[in-house]
Image (cartoon, rainbow over all chains, first blue to last red; front, side, top):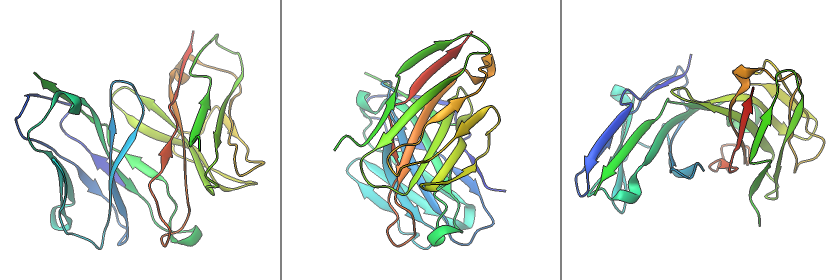
Length: 119
Length: 115
């Protein structure tokens, strides 16, 4: 069965520190997608990144970077030089593939990591 | 372009009452779904639909009904509310298919309390 584990329940850092949020997934599919979402205190879910199982290249977007390693089934997220505005709950998610058009779009979420960035 | 809209934003029910959470999207997305978010449990899929007239169960469907009569709307019905259904409910929509796969767009959520 598919599963996403975010072992870090809460992380507290001081502004400008780098922080890595861990995500480990389990799936028997050979084709799958991984996601990161941000949920700020206002409650909405903000899409950050999607990565498919065939693309193991790391990605950098400003202060954000993602490290995808199929060998360890991990998709970790690093924030460089954290800021107070980065304070949020971060969710890692996995999508099943199969069925209609090749994708079911069903997302399996981890339990989230609450990141608190102190000024 | 309003994206995904949900109404109401907040709702308090008594045990046994029924109600419908509304969800609408104006992006012509085939796929729509409902998730519930509970503390320490992330988001869990309740029901989903791949098009008008087609719905299926997710991980936690008990106590909820859905229907999809139009592409735009995907209401979630609580038949007889229970305290265990106190949660934040998110509706999401997206395109289908690997070739045009996009991220799911989430609505702002409905916070439901069942007393």
